[in-house]
Image (cartoon, rainbow, N blue to C red; front, top):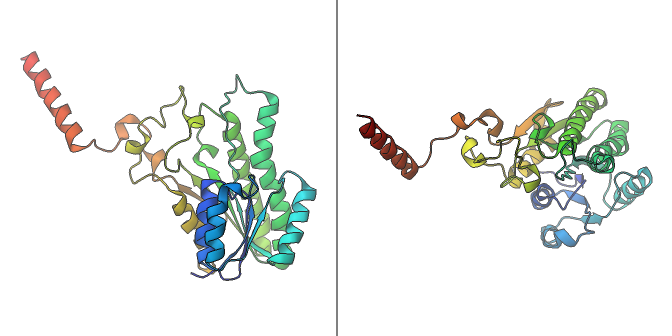
Length: 278
């Protein structure tokens, strides 16, 4: 699939998902507007590779919670790269904060960084897509939009808010030619320490609990390319869970079988226990 000359805005190019998207989208011929909280420092290698692939790349350092900053950034993108055809909102600020411990200021900061930025990007970029009757929006959220973490409730709340924002956007913008879909990510190459909780065993031995394999950032990149293209057709208002099946098998008794060595050890202990009981 070719996305040649499609202008893409990535809300957080520094995220692992953003870095993976840069290379894959550049290889498809897309032009990249990359919002980088580090001002490009964290993605120097990806920027160099994208330019080497022939992509036009515009690094930005925008406050996505500011309408004025976002409007100025969009004007610059349109002047240098053209109209934005794909918005990937992948802001994922996460900090350890239980309900009992979280301060009001931290709660609001996380909601702003994740959910408010999604709202303002939807209004500003999605609104312009609707005016011309075409475009695609992909919201990258988390399995914790539905399942509590027990460690970072503000993060979960922000992901749930983005999920409903996406549903409302799909209902409204779809009538005006804009396709809107959501990808719920599981742990990408391992859960962050902010999500490991004493209240939940979800991430204990999570690799064994994942029946397929752990998701990787490259999986998201492949999915985003598909969702951006015309072959996605009527796929609209969908929530796609990209977690390798983790949430299907999160109970200990639903784990994958242990390795042969582990199974041998267990069998030996069982036989020993049986002999002891005879």
